[in-house]
Length: 114
Length: 107
Image 1 (cartoon, one colour):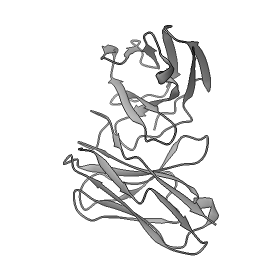
Image 2 (image 1 turned 90 degrees about the vertical axis):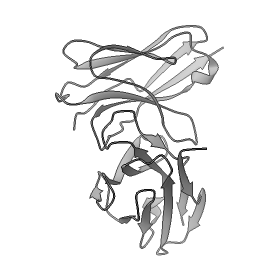
Image 3 (image 1 turned 30 degrees about the vertical axis):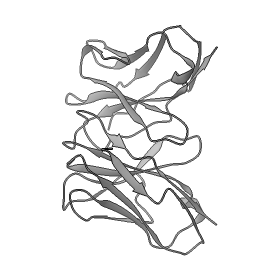
Image 4 (image 1 turned 180 degrees about the horizontal axis):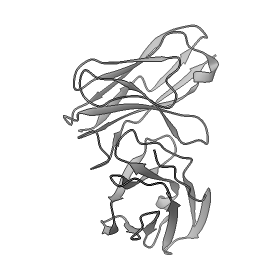
């Protein structure tokens, strides 16, 4: 099925460990986004990529890095995980970098840092 | 980026019409208004988007007054499966989500 695929779905890390969350879309969208959602809260934008080769900070970029590997893939890296980064991470994409046609979201990665 | 304000929660019964109003006083000229639905343990799902007046699709209607400082999502004849969190967003990119409106539908 067409859409946004995130891997892994679940992950437990120890404080200080690093990991990369993967995101891929097969809709030929130009823009991609990473959000985090804490329990009972709305989504907060971490980083986004308006087009291949560009990335920019969102609301809460500290502690994260991103790579727009190609048009399909946008990864999120935690270099040294902290308990405050325990959250559900959502990747999204949009066709033309605007709100037109809406964003398509993946099913999320549930990350726990102990 | 325009800030939005919407009720924290709403309750309804099956078969009723539900209207959720969102306030966005600082909306910019180029901004669109978009509503998303989120079920537990899932990513948000696009419901409807509009710029002005009224937009209707198979799921919902969106009413936007002339000054565009607010908008109302209308869900006709809700069912139990409409129980979810509904987000109102304003902007053209880098969409910022608030805490949304938690809609609970009772039998």
